[in-house]
Length: 249
Ligand code: PGA
Image (cartoon, rainbow, N blue to C red; front, side, top):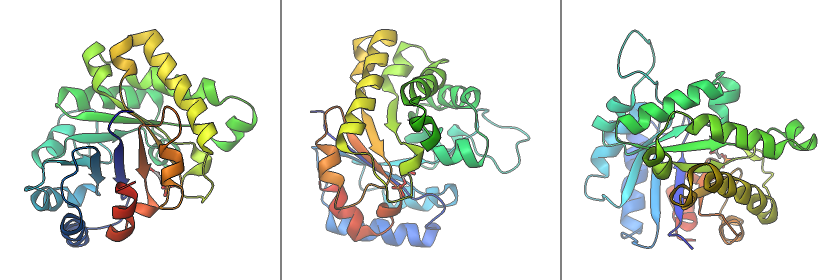
């Protein structure tokens, strides 16, 4: 088993003050753990403060929830991967289902964003996942692999090999409905198989995380599922004590 990943996606929670309070509490309770990788994704406005609070703990990776694909320009409200890197971010979520379904992010945009993230020297964490109606129509495999292919389409082999993937079924995000470990294993195996077929062994060794209503009660079961290399957690990552329990799974 690869060293597992534990990623906290705070979404639109925790401004700079709350982010630093969380990080101070989390660091005090959790010594560096070399057998796992912990990542925190605060809102963009909290990145700089979070980066400073994490300065003494390079074992914890700071991440940005979304970036634009250009380096700079007339894109009101957007930030670039380079700007995120300046704050200390080393990872960037791309194609989170809320970006896709609430803000109209297309497969073509995820491709450009992944490329921009790699160019800036960050690691993309590309999110893929089907909606409930797509699962009911038995289209899960097709949807997930289409999003995977599109998101990785502008990367060279090195870029693909360093990209992390998260499988997050849309029907499981923030709903309290989780995929079973068997559901997750099945889709993760499709993802791993596609990475191997299209980009070879090095790409297939990358981490594939599961996300969608993960909590302290179901984390161990999901993490022990075959092909699940880590967890991407939203709601249950907002309190430092609950997140500590999950990140010690
Ligand atoms: P959730 O969110 O854990 O609240 O379901 C996960 C995510 O959206 O990354």
